[in-house]
Image 1 (cartoon, one colour):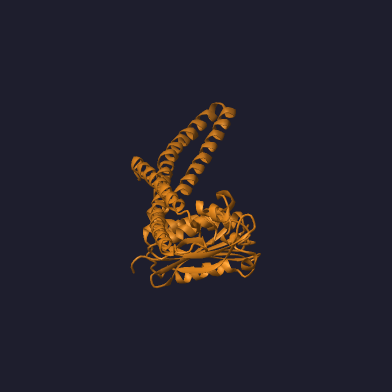
Image 2 (cartoon, one colour; image 1 turned 45 degrees about the horizontal axis):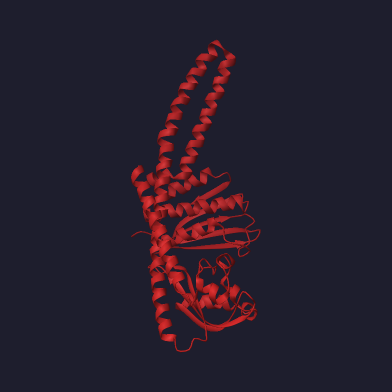
Length: 373
């Protein structure tokens, strides 16, 4: 069982460290005034803002954060998908450098030097992009400006990696707290309720012998207690899959399939040894849990198939396939569930792929490295 005090201290320390990192990050970004600095997520959505954006392009934070980075491109570049091409080059080569006109908030066009740099963690997983834009007309300031920009980007890269590690630690601390709550519900509250239910059933039988009406009411109370025990146990499973800790990922996925309110089939090749790292098992379970929840809630699927298999040496694949109506990607902001699945896949060095066929269902596939074979 996870120590309550230790897990809470760990959680608070990580939250405090994230707050400090956020302040350092803000100071770093806002300190470079001659440049408009965008931090983009892997899909190209702006997630940060600095004062240089306001000075160069006229936009306030609330007018730019959450929008696509292409919003500052001119109409011709938008039509030619220049922004998507820029990010593709940065993703492939590490950096994309162009000169083009950007559109000021007031509608005027400004000729700029534009640099997009891909940001990756120590395992090579794409975290997003740093987009740096400066107006072209500052003669003779290139070397000093370039040194300032290089130093700022290096510091930002380190801070992004640091925050990534802190976020992973925070996720671990949250899971430890969920495990503690789940075990308390399962081992303490559920057992207490079960003992009360046994006593209530015995008491109901005794009352029924002499006072049938009151005895019937006592049996109703006993049934309500039994329902409460079921609710407490289900809550404990949702907070933390106890089967995962005791019996491993396949057993936990089997239990998840059995608890689903629709037909869910779990396939596990028993002849193959998967060697899944314990540190990765919980993230894979959460991905499967989220994908099944999406299939039931959003795709309205009535058949779901889970497959866990080795696809290559050192690589394991989790696939969740449903027969629901699917959903249209790219029509709005990504849901938190999808972002969480991608984030968890990235933490364990894996990748997440979603194939949607309208009216034909959705396939969610997560490939990740296994343990030593």
